[in-house]
Image 1: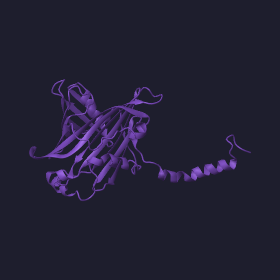
Image 2: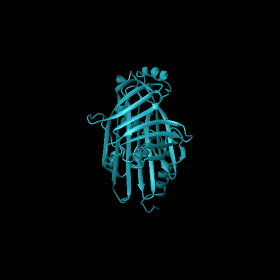
Image 3: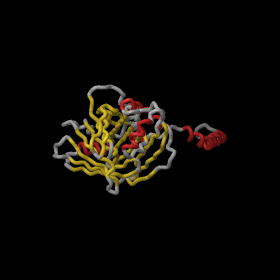
Amino acid sequence: MTSGWGLSRRSLLRSWLVCLIGKGSARSTEAGFDPISFALRGFVPAAAFQRRYRMDATILLLGAPLFTRVGAGGGYASVETNWVCGRDLDAIAVAVQFAAGSTPARAHGLNRFGILREAEVARGDITELSFAGLMTRSREESFEQGRKAMATSAVGAECIVARGKTSGTTMQTWIDTMAVDPDCNWMNLSATLSQALQHHPRTLARETAANSATTFLHAMRGAALCRETVVRRQFLHAGKLYRLETRRDTEHSPELAGAIHDLSGARCAEFRTAYLAGDESGIPIRIEYRPRSFLRLTFIAESEGTEPTIPSVFPKESA
């Protein structure tokens, strides 16, 4: 007796057993987990804004500039918006990325870099968030520790890989560590991140109540496009909640002064950003950022330069 699809009972049983036995091995060979590509599947980028930066590094001693290295590194930023293929015509997707790092030859051998990509997909009243990023682990907390770290370019760096997505009102975040080769730097970060995302997370997901919080780059862009003098917004980064606060001198000022606080109120970082008048991309033309008390990084937009290629955040199969 045969089934309605032309298969014997024995064939159906054999197929079921093969699927059951092979389930474990299939799990070990399946593709990695890239929450950005998953969130943006089916979308096509319709508009893209890009900006390249030169990075100057200033060493501070008791808050006063000690010396500055012009062109100690570089970076880039992009914002992409979409139109959608298929029936989901009310969906809107915005992808933002920022990558930057030092150039060892210009930074006394110091090789520090990071890349962050974020996607926000809105379908009616529901907004889905996802992110993926990679950055070198930096343990330097003082000027002396920073000076000693300048001799590490001959060996590979230890990096943190973070990725996450919202599930309802909860953000699920996976954080792993990985070692990278000495030739890895901010110029080839896109390929390094893509390679890292080809592997599944080795850690369990950290769950954080998202509520009305967004992600970091989207919080920064929202503050840039908002005309209010003071903007306060919670954002999620690497599984933790932070508070962004920005202030304009006047309503129409092209500059923002801002700070990032953790939930206890402690200040984690401070920055200043400047924007072109009438630029609706939300990408700054100048960024001053103090990741450490002894270090100030200044990113200045440059009109020239074609390297590295700024990749699209949208998956290739959607382009």
